[in-house]
Image 1 (cartoon, rainbow, N blue to C red):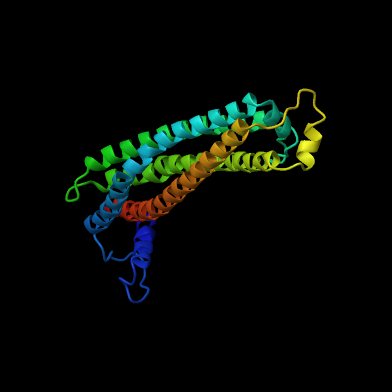
Image 2 (tube, one colour):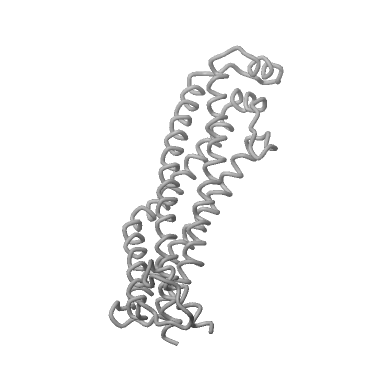
Length: 264
């Protein structure tokens, strides 16, 4: 009975094979071999996209290392100038509704970068395992069970790792946006006699900003904004790939699992 119900569901899903409802059991309008071929075709689309994205994914590692350098330079900028470090004490940093300390923000960003590096390694490994598994299949004689097994792996492990990487990149984006906002406020404080500077003057050892202070802030602001633009492009890229892969993997699972049922 279970097999008959699955076959009936296949008839409905595969678009009008039967014009009118008929009593169960009924003969499937598509063979297991046809369903198998469809499942293979959708996995082939996933494999093709993963290979096309491989160079882009590898550039993530370069980006993460470059981002670490940006955070280090930002940290050095804060520590190297008495003026900047004093002004920073008055800059609200609304990260997660709590952070009021630039050091915490820097630490959080470094932590996020470490998480992204780990997520990237997991995604690269699961991608390589999927491609290795797909390369072992042959469209003409691959077993439905093998195609189904690979589709399940892609739907669970591969897509889970892709989402984890995407989430890690979003975490970096969030903390980096706070760094950019803070740097902008520091830049404004260097050019004004407003509240931040007036408050900072109360500190012992406060000094007026020098040309080097302004140069460092301008350079850091430019670098952070560039990194933000690059990061947003990478997030958009992995989101698009993830949506396409999810669609193709879901189709592969449907067809291959139906083929498995027909072969039993």
